[in-house]
Length: 234
Image 1 (tube, rainbow, N blue to C red):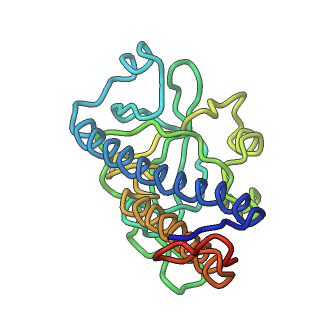
Image 2 (cartoon, rainbow, N blue to C red; image 1 turned 180 degrees about the horizontal axis):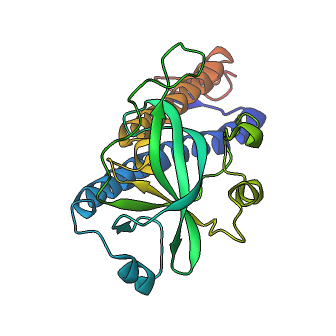
């Protein structure tokens, strides 16, 4: 085999190839981590819910499953999706938990597909959930539409505006409580299979990059397989 690497191309190619392989390994590890998280939560979601006193004694934290809180006061309508992916308006009220008001999802209006935003009759959740999960306060989506407080239509959780709209003196903006109807969004948003797909993509790009690197050297006469040329033939 005869190989004389092109200096500039090699200096660029080596870190690029290392980065592509590292990204593939990282996504493979993420797939395993996410699968473990899902398996652990499947066990966790079937345990008895904590009382509010137990949750507060342990310190209110994301992922806790607690008994239904008593929410009251003005209702907030925030656009979102149910666990099955149906779009619509989620209804929130405030409940006093661990000494501070926390937003609690109390209902849901599904939207008519293709309609002008009107709710489907009877689509409001009618059965009271028997357990809630403590979820992180949702971040503002990158492409979120503007909120319309005058119509009580919210696209994202603007804490100061929500506190004003609900007439509250304060609000715990670390968490929201949502009915436990399946896997939480942070686990199902990017399932393990998606991470595996990302890993395959990065590894595929690394292989393609290595092939292109080799072909460029072959065309330049710097890579040949077989016997090396004799000294003085170059």
